[in-house]
Image 1 (cartoon, one colour):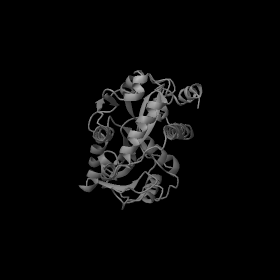
Image 2: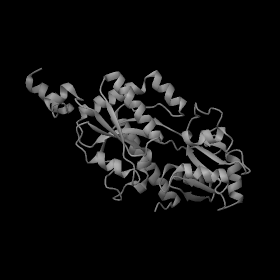
Image 3: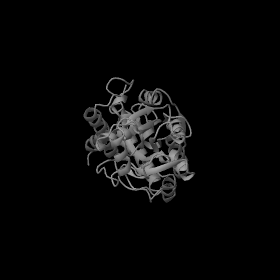
Image 4: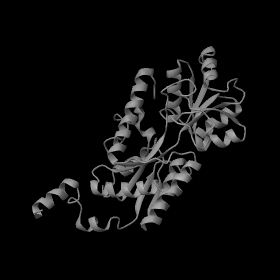
Amino acid sequence: MTRRQMLGLMTASGIAALPLRSRAAYPERPVTVVVPYSAGGPASLLARYIAAEVQQSTGKPLVVENKPGAGLNVGAQAVANSAPDGYTLLINASSMYVPTHFGGRTPQDNLRDFAPITIVGSFPLLLVCNSDLPVKNVPELIAYAKSHPGQVAYGSSGNGSLTHMGGAMFAHMAGVDMLHVPYRGISEAMVDISAGRVQLAFGGIPTTLPLVKNGKLRPLALTSAQRSAAAPELPTVAEGGLPGYEVNPWYGAVAPAKTPPAIVDQIHAQLAGVMQSPRVQAQWKEWGADPSYSKTPADFRALMQREADKWAALVAAAGIKLE
């Protein structure tokens, strides 16, 4: 191969676009991972565990920084506006692709302004109800909601959240009229469900399963396509009578748009290696998460687009108002 042919191949792969020093030594300094949520939630939990694993396996530190606010936009905008050099990453989430979060209403475009790297896990939602509600499964809930139109209320963590969209999809597919009650966080909704002020919620397993185990809430079904290892006895909503129903919130890693493909591929390889670790696989399952990862960054980009298309279609079909 001639020198000119080699340079052409390097340019096509994105490698020649990198400074010579970066090609040999990336990362030369700590990489910041921005989590657009408050500390303590699932996103922070996954990010901090992954950061520790990456540092242990590569000797290169990842520093997790929580930047909550404005419907995830504070953290997302900070990363979108950072240098595309691989030293600032974002833990994004499927909820960022609900229509309320794009279309000119956010400082950044969540599809165009980021370079996808990989999904780092997903948490199915758990449909739970107040223990006094006279239903024990999805068919009974649908029958009860049909006989009490507009009287069954479900709480969520806010308009446009996946805990909202999970209930909206359920109502649309079941053909029932349910009242949506948004809260500032799903934990507040759980308090009101336990007290009987609202009847239902679609909450993440880490939040809801402890309340189920102590008898404060009754579990009805999982929103994922498959049953969860954290609660294998619970059926899915699809098994309960709504075939095709699936709401499976995920978290992933993205970099600013225009980050060189060679750096994106290197980060992807590191994270994919971590996600395949038996220790990580076991820990994710203990938390009720699916330890999945994207085979390629292109696969993750396709997932992000599918998520946006899915919720846009539901909003249009069901006439959901997000504002």
